[in-house]
Length: 253
Image (tube, rainbow, N blue to C red):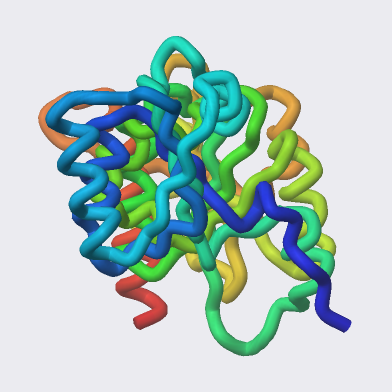
């Protein structure tokens, strides 16, 4: 039996004049709804309207308050917001409860306390390019804002992205379906290049300062580390995620 996605798990909202303009320039992105505050003027608004006409997007002229109700950012939306179709986005709990692990290898990067939008965007871009999905909790991580969209270079709308309220519940749901969970750690972890991975796996990428959260540690099946040369202590989390995704793809492609 299939289930229906909630609208919040179907669309990503982009707000602000320049981000929406850049969005309209992405011809392979599908825009479900575009709201513009009444009496909005300026050259960028003209450019947005011209692109709407070219793309066949019918903008809705509404009150500034209604735009802010969609954007959730009245101080930053500049009177414009768009709902973009994200076909690969879903609710993590529902996804794992309704998708049993099959024969095909499946890998995910789970973000734990990654709060910098640029890092989140770059991780999404790398994961998508290397055949993995991303699990993003709503609490403790960056929201999917225009900075994330920009850092992902628009790949966000093509990615497989699972959202959850908190990460522990999503990991438990995945483990119930046979997934193994690996945590990135320091020297106490096993060399990622020598550690065997299960066919269905999740790699938890922790906060750069604090690492993986304490409340996740009892859900980790094995700890991994990326070997470093030249006495370098650690990588930026987006760089580390790319290394992990690349190694996962190398083994499964």
